[in-house]
Length: 249
Length: 352
Image (cartoon, rainbow over the protein chains, first blue to last red):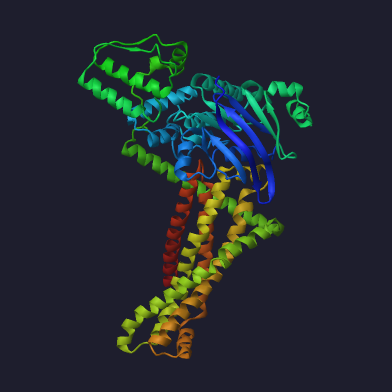
């Protein structure tokens, strides 16, 4: 694995009104790794994710995605960054009025010059990658939770982005479906080399997929740990980190 | 090669091969280290061209990773043309039958909905404490107070226009004073209640449908049910009471503002005195006219709430369904308002 940093977050500070959510957050995500953002409820994980994908303008700091600044970019520059990333939202955010195939085809039709036949073939391949063969003509409301997530993943991967962001991918899934999703992520990471940034609390999932993690804390208003999750579980000196990995109240 | 140039590469290749049809084609993959589904798509297209010309298509020396990716994508089975077109449209009789079933189901649902509301109203009469007072007051404010400015403005302009248009004709006969009768009578008995009801249908009927529809898709209605609340009593009754009380009051305001509009034209264009105009209006109108308008408005309020809430409860699926319900609530309400107004006119003609 190359050690080229694909995302760099420098001195990031986010506030809501006057309240500081976190500050002095510094980390790098390297190309091809599965990077997990952890923390208790309300510590700003989702806020950090939103800042990284340009949905939220932080109070201070810099975020570089593949060498380009996300913050304060003009719309055209931000579009170039957005073409390099895909996002799977917690509720999958599939468009309810379109079929699954239309959802996946939407970005492909918009951003490539492929013909209709080729787009359909590609959509079939994408749906095959996430094991949703035969569901192209279904509406999102006809799918189960796990299938919606996979359809959302197929849409996020439509243009084979360099980086995929996931907001709580296993929330609301049963353990088997959740484990299947983990395997799918590992497989896609290995075959396509996609860098993945995941926000989650699922401990099992973290130990299965994460190459590296950072942990945010509400009280410390910032990062309290960074590194290999297995190492941190066994060797971290921080009380909160120990509690988190060992599920103690 | 990636998503941005796969399209043009494929075009170039098919252009080239259409001029130089290949017999057999072997693609040397020895130095290919990375392949994604856009790359595989190009191979699929190439294979299609070769197979069409009855040639053989081969990949030479694909690496371990490439083979894995191609297997993952099931490259060997990607022969058939894929199409995600929706199923072919059914024949006209099938569609007619389906539509009929839909309408029957809608009627059935509407009847059971009205039944549920009647039941819930009965319970509220027996136990008035069941009524959610704060919600009711809130809806009264939203439907009535917040709607007053637009109702007043539109009614005022309606009175103004009506007086202006009728004066052109009546002036020829020196019957200027009858402008007051015409405006007063037509607004109080017909146009005031109808205009008010149409505005309320647009403002509040749509809001009722959207609110309940959104609650339905975010499972809030289910949550009410499982917490032991009656969703109809909780969501419909406060709106129903608010509308039945507020629409007649709005209609009264509408009458007053329309008459003021007419008065303005009468005084400034027709040389009538304000006193004469008002006296003529009072002379023409009977108390029955006013009450008849108020009564009709109450019925219109009832219709608007019933339709808005019914459409809201019928929402299923996603965001598009909420939009559809809102549109349909407004259109159906306006249709029912006009229909019931016609029925009332006929009743009045044969009884009054």
